[in-house]
Amino acid sequence: MSRKQQLLKRHRRNKRITLLIALSVLIALGVLVAWWLPLVLAVVGWVAHEAWFADHLFYSPKDDYQYSFPPFTPQPKVHLSGEQLRLDEGVMLVDEATLILAVKVKSTWLGRFLDPRVELLGGTHPDAQTFERGVNGLRYLNLSGQAQALAQGQLRLRGRFCRVFGEPVLWALEQPDYRRQRVMVIAPHADDAELAAYGLYSQADDAWIVTLTAGEIEAEHYQQMGMSKVEAARLKGRLRAWDSLAVPRWAGVPQEHCVQLGYFCLQLAAMQAAPNQAVGSREADLNDTRLFRQLNPFTLPGDADGAPSWNNLLADLREVLLRARPEVIVLPHPTLDPHPDHICAQQAVLQALQGLDWQPTLLGYANHLHDNDRWPMGNTGQGIALPPAFDSAVPMQPLCLPLSIELQRDKAMALGMMHDLQPPAPFKRRLRRVIQRVLAGRAGSVYGENEFFRKAVRRQELFWLLKHGETGVQRGES
Image (cartoon, rainbow, N blue to C red; front, side):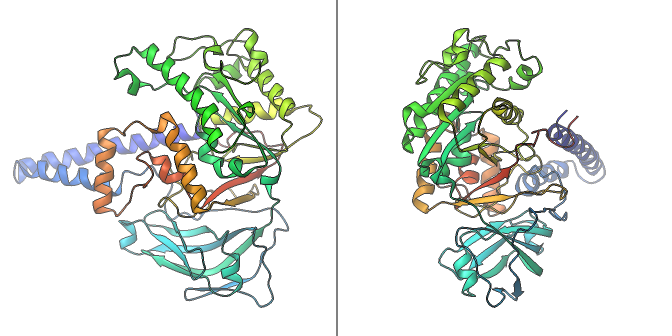
C-alpha cells in the first residue's frame, strides 16, 4: 500500500470515528433537550466542516517543513527587521537564480478560518504565498523574481492572517537556462505536460511532448450522453489522445515532436510487475494500444502488435529518446508525486535511459502531493512556495521558471482545451466552493472551474533537479 493510500485510510478512519461521536452527542441532545436541536446542529456542523475542515491535510500545520539543499549552495546573509527584508552590505544576487527563504510563520486566530498568506511587497512584482490555516512553523518562501527588489532594500514581507518572525535564511540556487536546450516533457496523462511545464516547453528552442497513457477511465461524463461504459471510455481515450497531440501546437511545438503511446490509465504498475504480459484497459474493453496512437507522426516498436506491456513501453520510450536525443527530460518527481502512473512513468524513463551514450539532465515535477491536496495553496497567479517536506536527509534542489502574465494566460487557455478539465464539478464540490467563498474567503480561478486552473496557473513553474541514481520509489511505501 502506498503512503498516499495509508494516509487516506487513516484520514477516513478518523473521520468515521468523529462522525460516530458527533452522532451520539446529537442523539443525546435530541432526547434530553429538544427534538429539533440535533437537526439544526447537524446542518451547522456540516456547513462548518465544508468551510474549514474539508481540506485533505495529512500533517499538523504546526509541523516544521524540513529541507536541505545541496552542499555549497550560496547563502546570502539577510535580516528581517519588522517587515523589511535586507541583504548584508555588498551581497550580490543573480537575477535568474532560484531564491528560497526559510522563515517562521504563525497564524493569527483569524488565520485558523481564513487562509494565511505572506505578501511580498515593495518591488515591481508584488506577490503573495499562502500557507495552511493554523500554520505555526518553519516555511520556505519562493523569492524567485524578487532579486532586484531585495538587492535595493525594497522588499517587505507582510503577514495577512499570520505573522512572519525569526532569523531568515536565504539560499540562492543558480541554474542554466533550460529553455535554450532540447527539452522533452514526459506526461503520464494528457494535461500533465501542460500543468507542470507549459511555460518551459512553450519557450524552449526545441521541445518534445511524450504522453504515456490515453487516460480513458472515469468517463461518467460521457456515459451521461447515452453511451455504455465501454463506449464512453473509448471516446474519452480518443479525445485525450488528441488533446495530448494537438494542444502543444498552441505553444508552437511541431506536430512531429508530439507522441502519444496509448497505454492504459492506472495499469502501468501491473505492466511493470509482469513486463512481458499485456495488461488491458480497466474500462474500455481493449487489449490493444493502437486505437489511441493512430495519429502519431512516426511508427513505434509497440505498433507491431499493440500489446500493452512494459517491454513495449520501454521499447517505445527508447525509440523516442534515440530519435529526439533530449538534453533535458522533465518527468514526475520520484518522491513528491504519489500518483501510481507518475511513479511508473518516471521509473520507465530511467530504465529506458540505461546504456544510452548520453544522459540528459532530469527535472522533476509534482502535479499531486501525498500530504496536501491543495498545494500550491492560494490563488491563481500567485507564487509557489515550496511544498511540505519532512525529511531533510536527502538534499533537494528546486529550480524556478518565471511566467509572465501573458504566458500564464496562454497556459490557462491550453488547460482549457483539455477535455478532462472541461466537465462541471459534482454538485457537492460546487456547493462546498460557494460555502468556502462566503465563509472562508477562498476565490475560484478566473480561468476555469476545475481546481487545476487555480493550482497550475501561477507566476512560476517549479522543478527539481534529479540525479540519475534516484530510484523513483517513494520512501515509506510497502
